[in-house]
Image: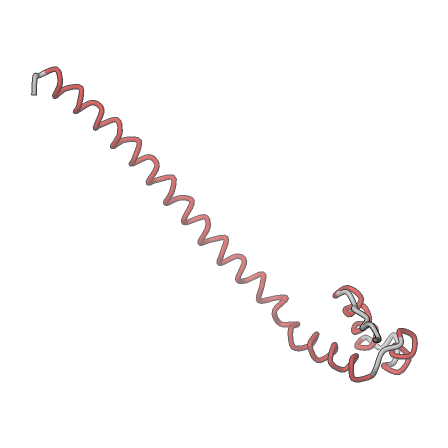
Length: 101
């Protein structure tokens, strides 16, 4: 049985960029790397389809970072409130035991 070759994302990117920038023709790339033209066409289509996600990812990361920062502020505030409540509780407990209640 023939074992299928696997290609890394870096290799696919390099090959697609060579053809898109005009460094080499599709035929040259296919011949050099022993690829079928259908395979190269599929890689190019996938590359072009996902290209906008490169810029969208940065924008979504910044939104995620803003949300993380807000949650961290909230955790800090709640931690301080909890510590204050614990101190108040211990003070009230000690006062009530002193007064005999």
